[in-house]
Length: 67
Length: 139
Image (cartoon, rainbow over all chains, first blue to last red; front, side, top):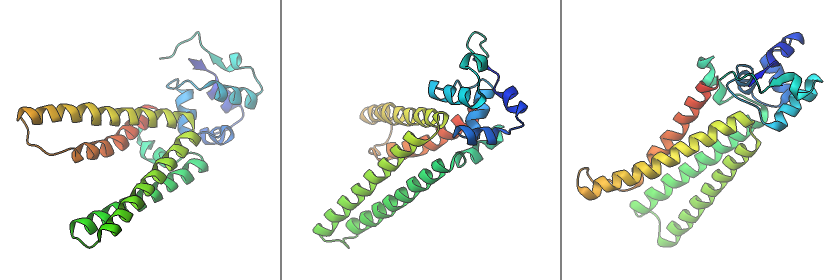
């Protein structure tokens, strides 16, 4: 599943560690989601959505497989 | 990024680090108690009642270790939980099926009889190795 997490994070000038802290997950989890190695659970996807003020569909794209 | 796997093993939210310390503490206490009771029984330092109390205490420390690990699994972030569960499945699978295969080989006389203790050692080693592999895979 492709996502815009890296772009949204860069727009806010946040590091992976900053975003991980805000989402209460590990930096590794953020990295794995950004690189498409791991798809977040629905609760985490909602947390990401709320944090960036965008809908889940605007951040995650299930149609474009990346693995 | 793959080189970060060892660092990631002990990183993550503060909640995870606190829970990992709890697991290490209970594991250390359990291991200390296990060794002390084993020596106490084998070298006959402990009377029967003392040995029984030692076995009960060791078992309770084991339960505390399992509960600490369960708490870690419940509270850790979802990727780490996935890695831990995959590692547990691998350790259990190797212990169970590898152990039973070895037992069949023992029955056939192809390998020397070593008992079942070594299976636990294999499981104990397999789990952290599998966690490290998982951390590298998702790094």
